[in-house]
Length: 297
Image (tube, rainbow, N blue to C red; front, side, top):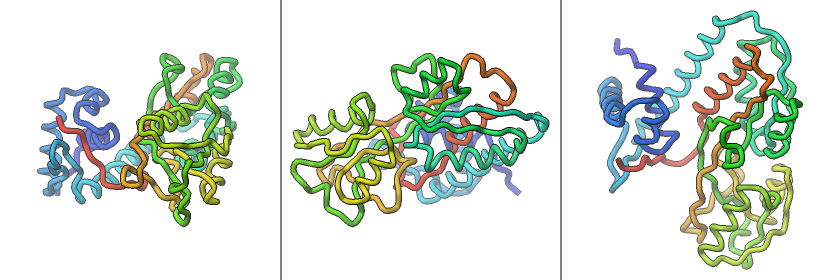
């Protein structure tokens, strides 16, 4: 029987997550030619093409998208298995901060797997905005934080996931057709709000911010009620939302990055265990999305 190479699968997942062979090569610490060679060997191993050319881009084939799901599961299971034998005696309490933008979708995925392999570690979760989490980390009130990574946190946080931002409205409403466009966004220092405003200004689209809240649930509630349009990262999308794009008159948005921030005092093995699990879980996270495309090399 053919045996899949986990190193090749990690590279494959990195390409899908980062959007290009070049960026993936930096993540997996390989040359671009080595990455290309790995993908050719992976295609030979599965016996199916996993990339197809589409103009200047390489796009995942249907088999490539299927393989991506299996690859993420295999990597996650491998890492959980190794972690279970590294230090089965870990015990203690960890204080974790996370914005509620991410908590609804990401937190169950992160904590479920971690608790299975570390049943004696208790996790106290505090949902706050990124700016508040970073302050609490500096003050020692939190041990670890999952945050929206940006220039202000450069050198303090580690970028662990990159995903696109999307314009969203309620699936059963036509709010996106209103003029001026009603928006539900975060406070003025929110990087997603800044990106939305810049994008609309570029295309000359009239808008007004009708709902402002630091709580993601309040923004989502306004969207689902058909009262406003908002911007959300890929991992926060819901099935009852409509994703809006250029065909609807909405410009593409930049990618957003999720980071992991760690307090100076958080040096115990239990902190290492959770930090490593978060990095692996979010890096391999599978979310519902359309066909993935990879930038041409």
